[in-house]
Amino acid sequence: MSDKVILVVLDGLTYSVAHDCMGYLNALIEADQATLYKMESELPSMSRPLYECILTGISPANSGIVNNDIIRLSHFESIFSLARKAEKTTAAAAYYWVSELYNRAPFVATRDRFTCDTQLAIQYGCFYQADHYPDDHLFVDAEYLRTQYHPDFLLIHPMNIDDTGHKFGLDSSQYRNSARKADIILANYLPTWIEQGYQIIITSDHGMNKDHSHGGILPEERHVPLFVIGDKFSHHAQCHIEQTALCGTICTLLNIDHADKQVCNELLVGGN
Ligand SMILES: [Zn+2]
Image (cartoon, rainbow, N blue to C red):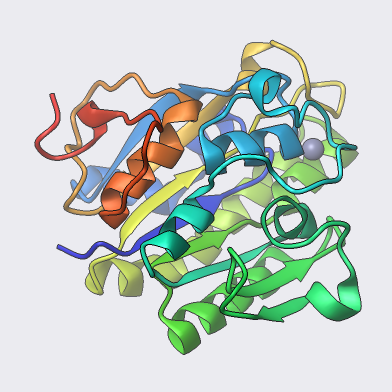
């Protein structure tokens, strides 16, 4: 069993489209290598508030990151900072808002686009600024970080599904096809990651609505997928998982101290 964790956040991917359109991930489920759960996002169903929620376990109402325009460092311990305290290695290939929450704010592209600084919470980073930055490029960035720096915790955060949802809406072939494309990209990497024993979580921050946006309480905005792959997961058929419990659960997988963070024990081997 490896303690290393890869967290993939497919931005803006609603549960139903993940369930219906991601054939490779469904193949892993049929092969008993992955389990899919439905999770409800915290509110508002927006990106920056929910990056903070996923990575610190603090809901937007409590974190103060209540919309996308709050540009400052997080006030809370994150998976990155807790991993650093435990002398683990951290990396992220992610949208620049993640750099602003945990490394430096505001983002300065010429300084932060490529980050290599062992003193920062995210030690190794490739951060992009354009929502249409191609997902396949982003996964190459992530694979570079993984193979070069061997991070204990790696965040991979592509944006094309969300970007396509804003352009064409939830009920569009373009939105569904962007999810299918992400599934194909994942199929190029997951066999290696699985073989090397990583614990892998694939989820989303929020979903998408028919008005080409998100932010509210509609099921399609709040219901997101949670795929888990790895031998540290219980793979129970039913699990109730709060988005606020991802941080503590990932810290448990990493085998690091996580103080008062909420953990979803039933998701893990030995839990109930
Ligand atoms: Zn969005």
